[in-house]
View 1 (cartoon, one colour):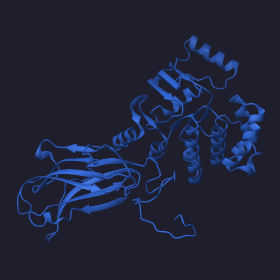
View 2 (cartoon, rainbow, N blue to C red; view 1 turned 90 degrees about the horizontal axis):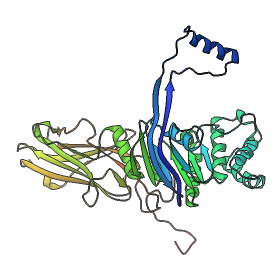
View 3 (cartoon, rainbow, N blue to C red; view 1 turned 90 degrees about the vertical axis):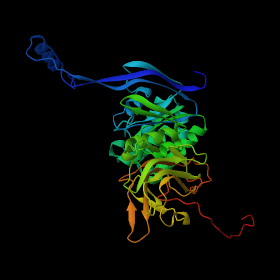
View 4 (tube, rainbow, N blue to C red; view 1 turned 180 degrees about the horizontal axis):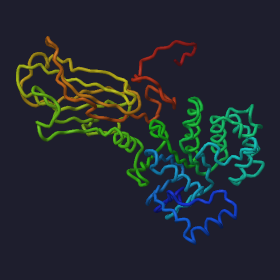
Length: 425
């Protein structure tokens, strides 16, 4: 496998719904059930087959952080369980190079009757570490988890948050070559989530591999080099994180970064103004689904003024994924004063870099008249376009080297002044 950490080929997993389950029956119960089936007194149960995964193949290089996204039931957790050797595949194979540390479900791998300290030793032993290595790592694990006071308490008495803290600390500090993380980090508080993000970055920087499943698209974009989007157990799309995340989010909304209408009668608008096309563009004029928060992005619209004598002022409104209005903006240039001549107009509104916050942006396009009485030319009843704003985390945005999410509808890069005792300021 040379520099490959993981190679998966044609992984598939089938589950049977409604099949007879033995459970914890006695031998007598099992024999009685089999006898009833043989003599026809009990009908064999019918069941439905569901493929949680179907023909999933991929490769992950050493040191990569790879994300898996998709709706609930897409097969993400099933895939990680196969890679963690918790469940076998129905078909296909996966080769994994090195030890695997997994955080899949709260408490997975913990014995409830053992204390936190004892479970650390148990997990370290499972990963192939000797007692000296485990003892050396224990102080770091306890300090990171923040549950020093309860480290000698049986984990069955832990809260969900304490479970997650210790589980992540164990998996991240016992030096697995491959770290597998499911959505459980969402259970932790904000401060702990940021510490986990930083630890994941440290792990990947040391040459180890991370597989990360999350519904937090900002975390996926920030941490992952590449992303696989799973849909109904299959790979829908894969590639750079910014492109796949943008495509996934836009698919959930049902609106992308480009729209056009070939027939004027079908285009949004009314008798005065029609919108015949719109798209999100970068500085080169290319259509983009995802944009770098540090760079300007344009909203291009092609308007057709159908009759003269009407004032037309282009307008856009941006709304974030939470439904908050980010801003409204009008083109206040004098060229729009007075009635517009009939014809086609190509207009682009440029949004400066380091203004928007991370996440999905929804764009409404309209046109207004400032003449009395005020007239609004409605060009849409909902978002016309969407695009995804991402921060590569290089330190030169409004967030600097902060790994968390700054709250607010915008996130401008301000000019700061400061005076202090250092001459180097």
